[in-house]
Amino acid sequence: MVRADFVRLAAVAGAFYPDDRVVLKKMISRQLDYGRELLAKLEDDGNDGDSLPQGAPKAVIVPHAGYVYSGTTAALAYALLERGRGTIRRAVIVGPTHRVPVRGVACSSAVAFETPLGTVPIDVASERRALGLLSGDDADRPDDVGGALRSGMCALPDAPAPALIVDDPTHAQEHAVEVQIPFLQTVFGPDLEIVPLNAGDATPREVGDVLRALWGGPETVIVISSDLSHYHPQEYARELDDETIDAIAHRRGPIHPRRACGAYPVNGLLDVLTRGLHPDSSPASQGSAAGDDVAFDLRLLGRSTSGDDGVVALAGEPRPAMRDPDEAVVGYSSFAIWQESESAGGVRTAERDAASRNGSDPASEQEASGHDAGHGVDRDADHGTVLLKLARAAIREHLGLDDDPADRPNAIIARHSWLDEPGASFVTLTEQGDLRGCIGTLEAYRSLGRDVADHAVDAASRDPRFMPVTSREYPLLDVEVSVLSRPEPIAVRSRTELERALKPGEDGLILADGRGRRATFLPQVWEQLPDPHDFVSHLLAKAGITPSLDWDHSEIECERYGVTAYAERE
Image (tube, rainbow, N blue to C red; front, side, top):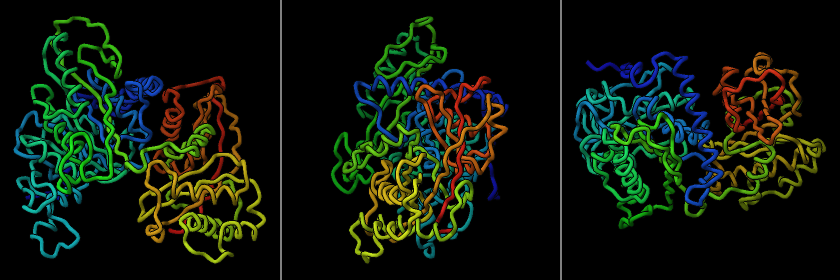
């Protein structure tokens, strides 16, 4: 009998990673701290002369050994993925099959995976669509459409992912996917969904088609789980691994399973990078996305072996000295892949650079979700109506949509004298509930009316995470305007005092170390980080400060502010 509530329990907790929640959180925190330090160095030094692209990667390749061996190498990629918190809500994780072989790519009939950090739901609807069991019109589909997935099911002949199957035995004790989940839970928080997959005997095109079917948009990250060579002497293993790393970096597949235990998942990703997201729309072209208006930027982040005691050699840097050249080791590497529109080019805007200098990075803020925070700014509902109308008018004017002259931004500002008062704001755009753009500033340096109007245009056209809004999209947008109160110092000397003084759900927080490192979280971030300690830890990390930092003598400057959010939707 199929259980609709089947949860796949942790199989390797206590072996590959700690089974105690507190110990596991501390271990991941330490490794992410190390990853952030490496990432900062990599961004400063550049990768082969080029700085890393902005934003969160679309895909990563990470190792899957025990955390004491490969956790720091994986953490380098996960530190990069922290950029996507608040935007990325789904992780498609593809690993190999170490214990139970399969033909094809196997999902599970489970509805969730459990780790010591909690239970993560599986995006079963996406699995069903990839299997061909769910579409816009299910009337002509088999009876299976309405029921739970069952082990042994296969994709329908016309499915988007013909090689996809349902196979529970291959997931029962497999570690390659499981070891990625605690990192993902830590980086993305409680709203994460996953699609756990084990790739067995399958061609690169077959695995690539599964990835294409589940590729999604900015809300989805692809996690490829693979170690490199196994149990060769350290000196020889490094030579083999460097050859494999070079082949991956230059998209020279297929990689042989003897060179990487996750060769099947890796080769599937390389197939996407070389054939494109729609490979049948035009002839494939090596090194670019054929038939797609996208380009992929593949970067090596770092590499190591199990004999390196957790020390990771960054891309372009020599490996550490070998403790024992004859020691049998396993190899690890970490890659990141960015997907860019060729027309947008991933350019960092001047507005975003200015916001970063002011301590606010709109691309990494946790955007408002339409709830009225109701704190700090005393403005009535009529003011909210005017602000929303002003934001829309600015977007319409930018898009060249006809408007009565009386409804244009300058006319609206002229009719309401309070809009001439100094003010700081964020403007958030959503489309069918999904983020479409968010830009803002922390401190008032111009009139509120001009701040809102300009940020509305910025959110629609200059958020580097998205293509500019088009006139055809305009009717689908929902607009939210958040007005910030003036930041005020918090009279605390220590981290403990700060965490006690914070009001979850109410306080926006600014932290600075007096040496140029400064960052903020809007009050809406409490929805993702309700615990004050976690809230402060993630904000410290955002500022480039060690998240576990504990201070007792006012080393960190703390300010709070309130937000009133006006939204067009409930």
